[in-house]
Length: 387
Image 1 (cartoon, rainbow, N blue to C red):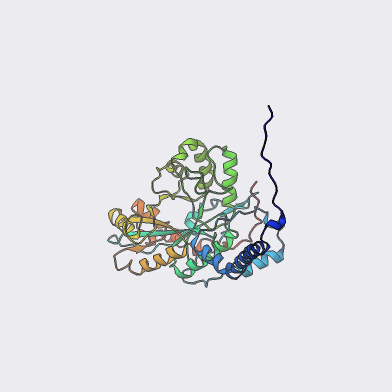
Image 2: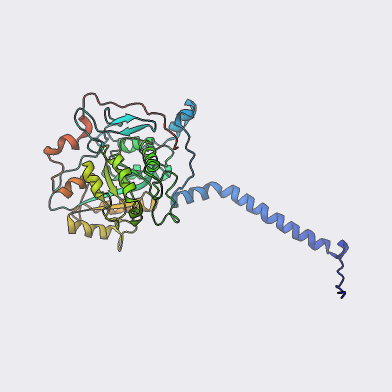
C-alpha cells in the first residue's frame, strides 16, 4: 500500500522580514556585549565579596617544593601578609631542635630523646592563672590558610588566647604557622577524614578514607603532618563512619599521636573513638563542645557560656569567616565582666585532670621560651608531593 505524504516546501529567504531579522540579531549582540562589559567592570569586586563570604575550596596541585625556583619562593614570601608580631605574646619559633625528624615527607614531630619533651608541651601557649570560681572558655578558629584574606583579618583582630586550626590544603601553611606564633596563637593541624557527609563536604585528596588500607591512610596522614611544624596536636571530625574502619583508623592515628601530639575531636556528637589511642600514646584527648554559629540560641556563645558554667570549662569551634570573626570580637568584650576566663585549647587538658594551670609547678612545660640552650630555628625542608 502506498502512503501519500504531504509535500513540504522550504521557505524562501525572501519570505523573511530582513529588517526584523537584523533587529533580532542586534539585540542578541547588544545583550552579550553588555554582559561582557559588566563582568569586566565588576569582576574584582564580585570575587572579593564571594571570597569573604564563602570558604575557599581550591583544587591544589601537589608539586614538590624543590621544583620551585628561588625567585618564585621569594615572590610568595613577599606577597605574604605580615601582621605585626607582639614580643610579649610571641611563642617560641618552630621547629625546635630535637622535636622532629627528617623523612621522605618532610619534617615530622618526634619526642626529644634526651628529656622526653613533646611538641604538645613545647608549642602550646602558656595558660593564664585560673580562678576556680571562673569557668574557662577556649575558642578554636578553623580553616586557617584556605582564604589568606580571612586569615590575615583574624590575626589582626583576635587576642593571643584564641587558637587556630591550620589546614593542610593551605598553599603556604608554614607561613601561617609562623605568623600565628609571632602573634602568640597556639596552632593545631586539621586532619581531613571521610565521614557520612562526604558528598556534601569533600574532605580533599589527603583525607583518611574508610575503605583504604593502613599504609595508604598513613601516607596521607604523614603528608598532612609534614606540611608545617609547630602545632600542638591533630584535630579531626569523625562520626560513626569510623566504626566501619576503626582498626584501620586507630592504627593510623596511633602513628601520629605517639609522636607527642594531642588529639582534638571536632565533632561534638562523636563518641570517644580515639580515647584508647590517646591513653596508649600518653597524650591529651580533647573534644569540642559545640560549633558556634550565632550569638544567642542553639550553637551560640550563649549556650557555650552555659556549658562552661555547668562543667567548669567549654570549647567552642568556629570558622574564620569575616562575620564570625566580628561576632567573636563583640562577644570577647564582655567575657571578663560575665565572670569567664579565656584560655588556650591546650589548657583544657590540665583543667580536665583537675590541675591548676598557670602555677609555678607547671612553669617548665607552660613556658616554652626556654626549652633548651640548643633550641634554634631550622631551615624549612622541601615539601614532598602526596604520592
